[in-house]
Structures are given as structure tokens and as C-alpha cells.
Length: 229
Image (cartoon, rainbow, N blue to C red):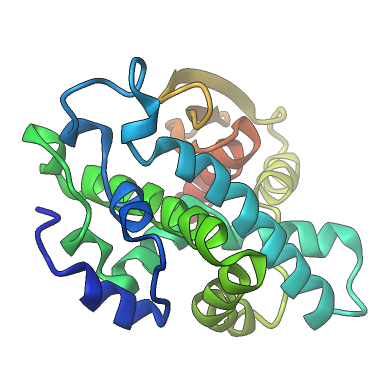
């Protein structure tokens, strides 16, 4: 992840051409690539755009779900939304966009597959925020629909609520309810990452990471379910 590839190639790939080219550069600038830290100079990193893009992405997908699943209840759509805006989905979309070739990072931040995926996922949100500022919500939604519609349509049934499923499994085995514990919170205040663990009698704990405690809890529950089933 060097960030040296031609930005015009990325514009061609995502089918959107920026009027404000520096805005695209900002969306692709990780805080490690700047001289000043994001704490003292937030305007020179993509973290503020990431914050905005997260909200734009959520609205665009909610709108898409509302139109596509016209007969589904709120709970089912909420589970679909959570899956589509998850860090895993963002990382997958980032790979489709080849964002790892365009994000500007510095030093050791580029090392490690999981770290690279996280940086690319964050840049994906920042890119959506940048498109929103440059071209408005319609342009941002077009981008979201282009990349996220296949993910949405691939799942005919709503994703299962892993926390509920794990609870039902534990009760069926005669075990106490699963115990969830917050391990740590990392990242900037506007875009934190939570690490949660879940423990069920007779099983080693499983860990999940997400942008909210709720998401991290679901990820941890899904990880434990995958191991025990």
C-alpha cells in the first residue's frame, strides 16, 4: 500500500470523476502519511471524511433496503444494514476498488494484512464522504448502489442475529447465557473500534471487533458459533 498509483485510474474504476481533485487526495491520505498527527491537524487526514462517509453509506444503504425489501419488517432490514456496513463488507469493497494501491500511508502502517484491510476499509468510507461533498448525495448513492447492490442481492434471507442464535444454542445445551466482555477500545473518538469477547461454558472465548459494541458483540458471537457448529 504505497498510494502512488494514478488517481485517474481510481476515478475510472469507481466511475466518478472529481471536480475537486484535492478532495480525492484527502480521502486517500491516512494519518500516518502526514507530518502532523490527526489530533493536531485533522484537516490533513481522511478521518473526518471517514466519519462523514460512514453516515452517508448508512443512509444510502438504508434507502436501498427500504426500496428493495418492501415487505420486510424493521428488524430484518436492520440486520441486513449491519451486515452491509460491517468492516468486513467495507474491506471486501475496498479490494474491489483496489484502494490498497491508492491509499497514502507512512512507515510501518502498511505492514500486516489485517492492518492493510482496516486502513482500506476506512479509506472506502472516506471516499464515499468525498464523493458526497464533491457531487452530492445522488452521486454518493450511485457509487454505493454500484458496489453494494450485489452484496445485498446475494443474501435472499436476512442475516441471522448471531447473538440471539448463540443464546438459543447455549440454552439448548443447558448452559448459562453467554457472557460478553469489552476487551479494549481503540481508534479516534469519532471512529472507534471495539474489541469484545464472548464466553460460553465449556468453550474457549471468541473475540469480535467492530465499529460499535453491538457490532463487535455480533462478530464475536458469530465467531464462536462457527467454531462450535
